[in-house]
Length: 200
Image (cartoon, rainbow, N blue to C red; front, side, top):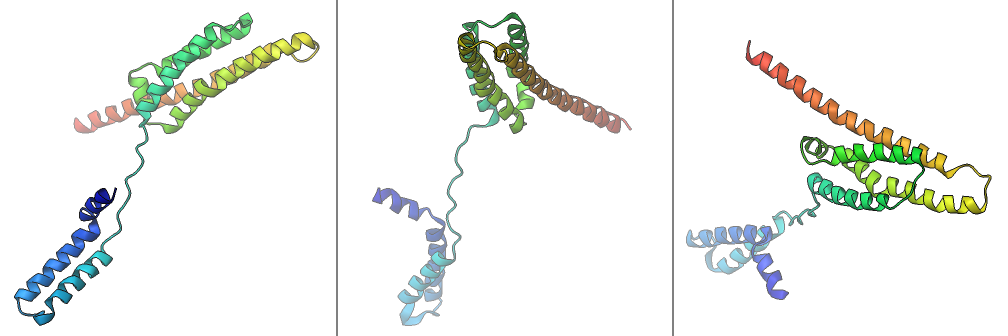
């Protein structure tokens, strides 16, 4: 531990700047400026250099880039699909869930769509939230609430709540897909303008 700290100091900005200033003191000594007090001059210049050196900047934390995050979300989505395959839903809710999962699968499909999404941290977050939180919570809440509703009928149907939740999630995913399409449309228009300007 002490050895690594010492080696770290040797490579630090403080030591490098101090050494450069100390070397300047040695040059002054050979030039006859420092006189008999040359050790004090060399040590003083080293200390001054070490003091004025900029502080060490700690390295930034190594967070995964959006592409790596999308790979993780894709793996979680496959786990979610396995869970959903074992849940029995009423036909209307099952149909809405199928539409939603198909759209999420298209957004997570490796290729140009995920390349565009990787440039949009908010989009990656929305997709991650839908896969890891919103969809499983909606389905799990329905399963638990349906069981209690059978014991205490007369309340609002849990199926209706689930259908509404899945509809809202589908609309959110559609907005994300529309944003991806708009990004590519703008890119296409920019390329057209570039070619038109180049041909003038």
